[in-house]
Image (cartoon, rainbow, N blue to C red):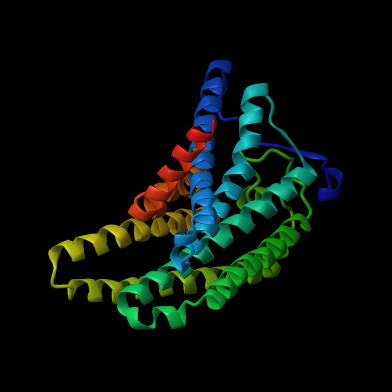
Length: 310
């Protein structure tokens, strides 16, 4: 295999060696997928149909739910198929499409998490300017910028990754197509091209993360000045889970892509990939949305209405 054009398919990581364990993994992945689809589907339906939820916060939650559905549907169905049918194959085109979609949805999610942090900063620290700073046009522009920048980011990374010659076989040490695993198969010496794209992406990610940390520092300062203990507790219970998931998402994703090859172990790579690609879509409906009383009431109204119709 002298170059990537001669490779028609890749071999993904087998999650288990025995058929019984493969069926167990299939059931586990199926349960996670159904939970993500149900939770995010209810959020999308409730926000889209509930006119009283047409506010900036719920608009960004709707976009976040769409990215969660997209990211989980990009990686998990193929892993379920391979576990059920005892295969590891993924086509070269399918691998490229999977990588593009995963980067697209994850980059969009990180941008939306940054925007949602800004939304909370304005609502807590500058409540009188909330309507001005986060009007409908501004929200639409920010959401469009998040999706568009993620598309360009995914396009650049996918084109860069799959333009490299591959000469170290076709077996990937991951259950989905991931940049670090594909680069291990590369025999290219074009370090400057890899480094340039990595520096640009890392700089943008670091800038977003610094903005999130700085915003939360300002939020916590404002929260500590709230005279009511109940008010402080409500603000902290809203902000701390958001910060925890952002930290988990950023730290595991960054470490998975920037860790030195010397500490690249199959079990570690698998755990990191699950933490940044599977866990956030499963937790986001609980942390950002279904803990909100207003949204929870809208979801229950949707469920009751559906049962009444049927």
